Amino acid sequence: MKGYMVIGGKKVFKQEEIEITFPYTEEVVGTIPRGDERDVQLAVESALIGFEKMKKMTAYERYQCLQKAARILSNRSKEFAETLTLEVGKTIKESMGEVGRAVNTITLSAEEAKRVLGEEVPFDAAPGIKGKVGFYRRVPLGVIGCITPFNFPLNLTCHKVAPALAAGNSVVIKPSENTSLTVIKLAEVLIEAGFPPEAVNVVTGFGEEVGDALVRNEKVRMITFTGSVQTGKIIMSRGGLKKYAMELGSNAGVYVDKDQSYRLKEIAERIARGGFALAGQVCISVQRVFVHESLFDDFVEKIKEFTATLKVGDPRLPETDVGPVIDRQAADRIMEWIEEAVNAGAEVVIGGKRLSPTLIEPTIVVNVPESVRLFKGEVFGPVIAVNRVSSLEEGIEEVNNSPYGLQAGIFTDNLKAAFKFVDEVECGGIMVNEIPTFRVDQMPYGGVKESGIGREGPHFAIEEMTEIKTICFDLN
Figure 1 (cartoon, helix red, strand yellow):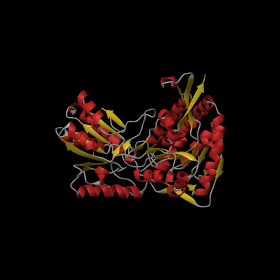
Figure 2 (cartoon, rainbow, N blue to C red):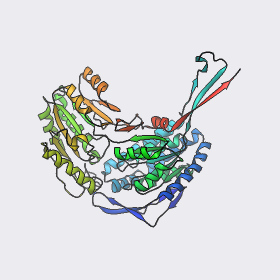
Figure 3 (spheres, rainbow, N blue to C red):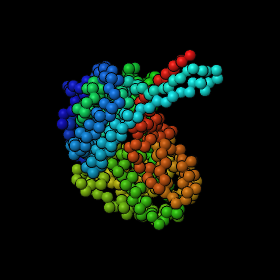
Figure 4 (cartoon, one colour):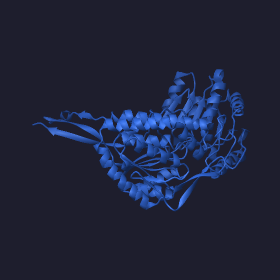
């Protein structure tokens, strides 16, 4: 599959290319152009023209285009899912699920296109002011740079691009070099649906080349980015005076309270699914589990039993539950983190083996010291750490013992315990009697601390992607 950049509605090829490999076999499944700063400049100039055309579209016209894009994507679900599985290595079940969510994200954004609202400002509430009336409007920013990750290249791109277009902006998308083919297809769907060709641009290549040029471009009014904390900090240090939305990862914690013995098997299964979905490569994967000491041994046995039933292997097969990680470098790092934890005193109770260069068994590690990377960092792999705690207060303390704060969860029947957890845990989202991996696409999604800045979800993304223009009339 030969990929290309999409600039001003035209396919752009380059002599130098980057290979995209199927993570399970490491076979080359496609190529993309290795873009450079000049390509970014051309894309931004195109997007500026596209923005002028977007400003002339009515809210209803933007709504219609997004609705049509959702229908086209839905009709091509199987094709998109197969491309996702080849690029990302996620199971075909997970890929079909992502396409369905992307259709929903675009549909939600279409509805929000009709609800970009302003409000009257009561100028006469200030002393001595009479005869002045006015209001504010939300207006689009202009060109938005969208830098998207490898793990959900379709839906997370939709979370950036669809609200941007709904609000009347134009976009330049820089997809992950591992998973660009899906994003190219999405851009073509949006243009086919009726958006100005200049308004939807894709520049492929490496982050330090294409991404950096996009971030530094002064005509780009906003950067919306999903990726690592380190890269997010670099972006904000180099981008200068523009808006930012940053979703920078997590090592999500969940606490299981002492009153949950009657449904421990169900909780263990949900936590395992939350930790091993997409081989653990989800920003809100369950990574750290804190179980009340009275239930600890029973919980470990139950999560171990369920983990043993998961089928690991070829993501193209419908029966596969857990596929490969994105590449062998990621697998190297994950295995290093497991080994470090074991050397520091932790115990692997199931899994821990590398079945191929990119395939790692779903792994449960218990009694993980706070000093190791498996506790402190974001493992982004099929590994769950389970530690015992003696109380709700200790559970809260341990969940908070992290530089991240994206989402967290608690399982309890105690209303006071639930509210204490909600009040005291430092996260952008708290899930009560649910795993922190839970997300629906319309909710405000984002974190605190090093998990990021701003919120996604079409309604909330549009607020990030617009600015307020205040209008005052003097009627005297």
